Length: 277
Image (tube, rainbow, N blue to C red; front, side):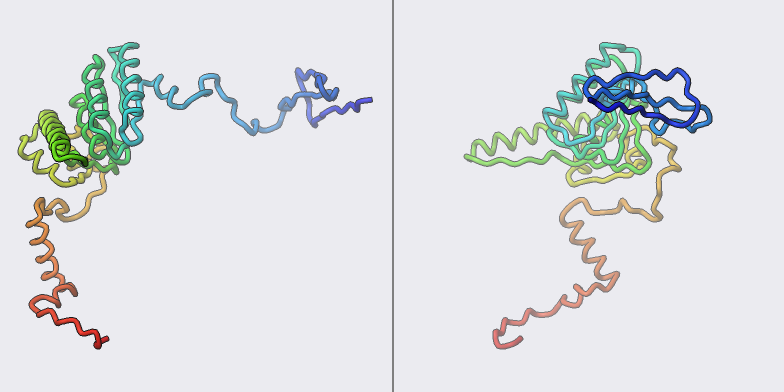
């Protein structure tokens, strides 16, 4: 004979109904908060809170690019952009970017989708927007490109490699140069900088603060205002952009600070003596 247990709780109950468990036969009384007790331990979950959080953000017309740009990520971002634009082309789409960059061809697919959208595409930088991430950050609708105050933005030229026969290497090199020229021209158009300056600045990794990116033309606004950005006293942007400039800077820095490396200058190299230890 199955035992019968009743779950009771102290306090006055209202609207409590018992039910018998189908398998064990126990009578279970659901817990109902009594008068005078505190709030429930677990907050109630609304129906719209169930499911993927990214789906909830999509309802607010927010798209996240939070990883390296590849074909899979590009397909997801493009599909969301086109869907939101088809739902309501009069409302802005917000593209949040925290990406180290990635594939040029995949990034150009996202860029073309942004330009295809009838709705304005706001871009917001969170954390880091580097390489293709920085390119897409500046490709948003002018006047609606934002950055968080502690983000970093980096631009550089396309990276790649090739192997195989000499003709195949030449084909790949020409393709990389084509992408470099295209990216520089587009970046020159939306930043307002001359193409020559963009080519010079992207020859090496060029890191920028939000203030520098705003001055350069990649973004338009800093969330929280310009005063929200932590500023370092002195000029941190004076650095060489060529190999000769870097070598000259290194020599001047050693002479100014009296580095230990300067003690070896002007001395002849002694021949190796195996008996000397």
